[in-house]
Image 1 (cartoon, protein in one colour):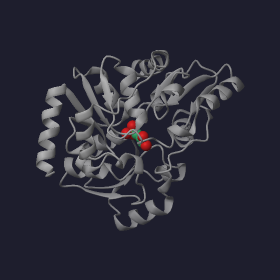
Image 2 (tube, protein in one colour; image 1 turned 90 degrees about the horizontal axis):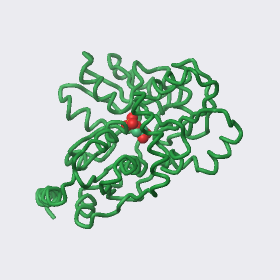
Image 3 (cartoon, helix red, strand yellow; image 1 turned 120 degrees about the vertical axis):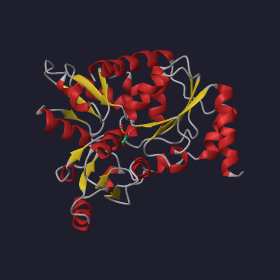
Image 4 (tube, protein in one colour; image 1 turned 45 degrees about the vertical axis):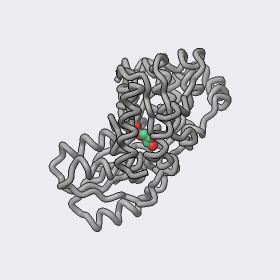
Length: 303
Ligand code: 13P
């Protein structure tokens, strides 16, 4: 099918089903181009919670669509490829978290949004890369904090807040592709460029950054900053958005190896298929949903 026809069909079906397409900043350019909203984890969950649409087509990894479903039980949340999973989220199971909680029974449990619904149901409060520091700062009266599953985000938050955190050994394989030598090389090629990195990067990389930001934090920063060149330390998919929004600025991937294969599974054809079939629906049991929602709502109240 010609691309124009494909997009027309997607638009017709969106109207028919009263659907919106939410797209994470790492998605393929062709998917970003058909988005009603592009954003980071926090923005997309906020939009999902407030939309009047009946169907949400979520183009991101599974935990993101699940978060939308937790927040909007009255809406149908569909994901165009149900195998788009997040390796970091898969690194912590409910069983492992329960064992950790048993070891530290008095600890407050803070979990990154990159977790399954079942794990979220075990948390006291959720956080995203945008608000992790704020969430930890809001827990000043808590003596002990467990921070799961990303140990690099935990390291960063611990450094900024000065709080000692009990961590888990999870990591994002894509962000770990970015190495100190990559930043040094790109800085040599582009000495005037500002270095912006995601807090899932290793601490040696973060130490070389001018700014540590979530993906939409990066989008906002580059728009408002006077610099014309940026070295971008996160999944390379965001560069399409940055360039599209700021055509007169230059963006250099810190590492071309930082590609998340799961984020690239969704295509325009799969979006069309999901609107034709209203599949695959993301379902969370009511019991898990209600418990997980409390942790997300607590985050939204704090941040
Ligand atoms: P953001 O919330 O910053 O978009 O990050 C999402 C993510 O999964 C990073 O790996």
